[in-house]
Length: 249
Image (cartoon, rainbow, N blue to C red; front, side, top):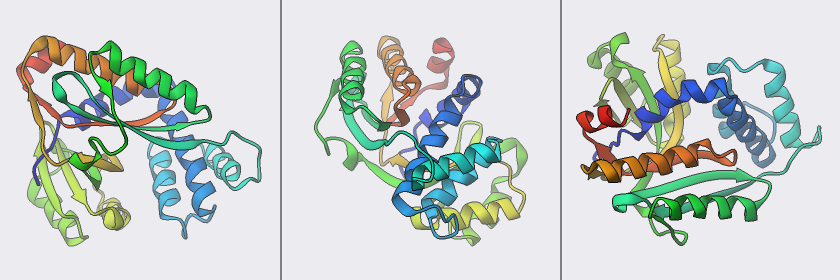
């Protein structure tokens, strides 16, 4: 499948710093709460909630935190009501950017997101302007140092995965959204150490960013978006050469 950007790998490396600030827990709690509100608190009967709880457990979130988030979603405990919003726009170099948000204040969130785009010489667009450039897929990342590609393919493809792709230091396992849980569970049972596992928006094709000033502006935009409290996930259809990435590090 075409279109694998480095952004998923960059986000994974950045995730360690996010965890120290509690960002990952905050995002997971929001996802669990919304999943429970939309589909009920039964993990077995709510695939989205089951996936969110699995992600929370992978990040060693305490069981009490998970339980409270579910109860807030089902209304058993008081809590904020979050709206899910998808913002779309273009960043520096014409890179398409999708921003998934959960917010209790739409006006605040859209003002902040628009400001970030404008500051980076990008622009926030209308609904649908770039979403067509992405496919919704299950995306599981595995460290290449932990197993061979053939071993991973045997497990993942037998479980129903669509593809296994080599990307920098990771393998990316791609699935149809409806097959994501089954593939992840099969990989867990096989003892595969997963760096991350989520249903994501994967770009169909990528734009090569080769100019250092554009790359700097793009990374600043994406970092600003990722650091915002209301932002759950950011997707972008770009690729950057390893030598240029080293300059930006």
